[in-house]
Length: 384
Ligand SMILES: Cc1cc2nc3c(=O)[nH]c(=O)nc-3n(C[C@H](O)[C@H](O)[C@H](O)COP(=O)(O)OP(=O)(O)OC[C@H]3O[C@@H](n4cnc5c(N)ncnc54)[C@H](O)[C@@H]3O)c2cc1C
Image (tube, rainbow, N blue to C red; front, side):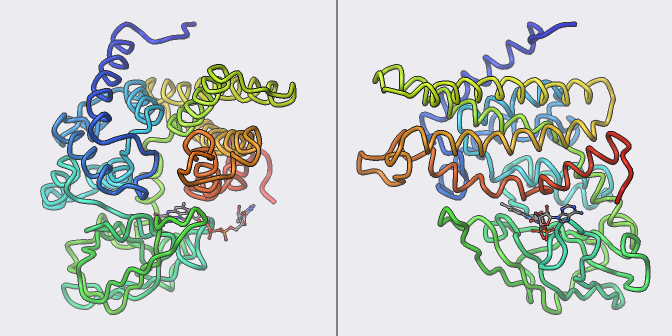
């Protein structure tokens, strides 16, 4: 058994850090693409120039064929350094792999280049007001009409739809079929007539997600991905890409390290309860990091982590909330001040993080759903 990077992996980590030193001095750090869209765009451009937008993709589609461990190294360093790389996460994580796995040659030629050049932003139109955890209940309809489909329905929580030029969309093409078997997968041009994006403002007062309304939107049959009514299976397969969740743990670790540095530098008085809370969280970050690298290691051995990926997501997101809650409390009233008049702790990051990360145990499958997956698929416990 080995713990630790091989020499090539350690070299990659140092190379990523050195590159981030340069680029972040220009774009600035920002954990949230929504807070500073210009920084996010500038960072995406720099990533594209470096050829690092999609490290895990095959070389023929503009990737580096990075191994799962190398991919985790990129993700860990970007998150720890607060690189503003959120604009490409949907396109690189889900959209591209779905297209190069299931797309026609025309679809690959049309879409993959725009992702690796960082020019095209994608959003994910899956959830609906009545279909989140039970996604297969979705009601958005696509009705075939000659060479087109006509789409009507509503999506919700659509992150970055206000920046996106394209959207991966699930819609029901056979309302008579059992619910998982009547769904198709589409690539939707967001500029088409009948597409309306309405902002939703989150509790951190940021515009990150949206409602998406589709009214008689006509799209060509050629923008369907894969076979008609097989969309559910395409959607579940693509959700398996990039699931180590190491970024969440690395961001938590950074917040803790900054706090510990500040407490040391200013010799802030901590109660023993506060001290032990910080020690506990550092231990949890180390556990989260190991779990995440274990998921990447399993992938590198050809395995398809399922229970393990759910455990990593669950652990990382719940940990990030514990970290931000503890830090807000550690700094007392200053921990609750957000804006920069000098009274806020750590530049207001703990409270910003607390408000932003509350949603993380809902996004991408709630904690309850992850526990269900671990209990049923992982432990073989009976479904109720
Ligand atoms: C920040 C953020 C960004 C998002 N971005 C996108 C996006 O870009 N595109 C997109 O399509 N969607 C997006 N979503 C939506 C997200 O996928 C859903 O919110 C999530 O799947 C939960 O669905 P829901 O909100 O409908 O809650 P529901 O499914 O209605 O769940 C409500 C509560 O019931 C619990 N529950 C439901 N079913 C079960 C069960 N079987 N067992 C136990 N408990 C259960 C849930 O855990 C939850 O606590 C985003 C969400 C967030 C918070």
